[in-house]
Image 1 (cartoon, helix red, strand yellow):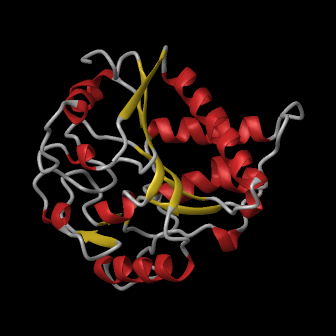
Image 2 (image 1 turned 120 degrees about the vertical axis):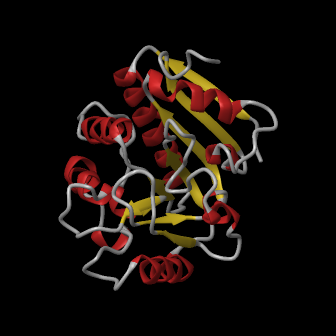
Image 3 (image 1 turned 90 degrees about the horizontal axis):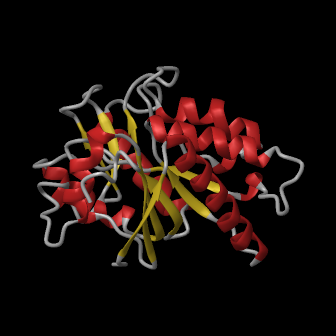
Length: 246
């Protein structure tokens, strides 16, 4: 697992602009090598800001190298198991602020199952695992993740049994301490099959969790974010508030 690199930005807006610009550069580089990049998205407030910046930068006429978003494959690290039109859905917001704007191909956007497409969260997790086996490349170019004040990552929560699942791609969470209670999450083996892992963290309420996740020897059962790292690169994009305990 790669040694984490820390980037501290003045505030959430500066962080979002930096991440969006870096993502566009990376994807353009990959596409120039005639490879179709596969990425993992996350939800949350700072992710929404990043998505808006990606859309804004992607539509600027001055952009030197454009990303062909119809040739980018999109997955999710986790999702709320609710109705497809629920405002709780990470995918709903990402489509509106980002994916529809940049011209992502619906065939390449792999949303996690909702209550309309799976009978329960367990069935949804199994279906997403099969979809990833069938259409995934076996490795993400980049996975973007957040971290909760309790140290959770994706929908892997401290002390939960899903932290020890190693034989599945995705798992169901039916008693999430953060609403809504039913979710689907990728497991550690799936999240760690990434060349690059980017943590996007904004706000002083996350500062303690960030410090604990980056501390040497942290138990992933106590701070799940400590268990995820890229094969080649792990970057923590922080604003000053989130970095104040480092």
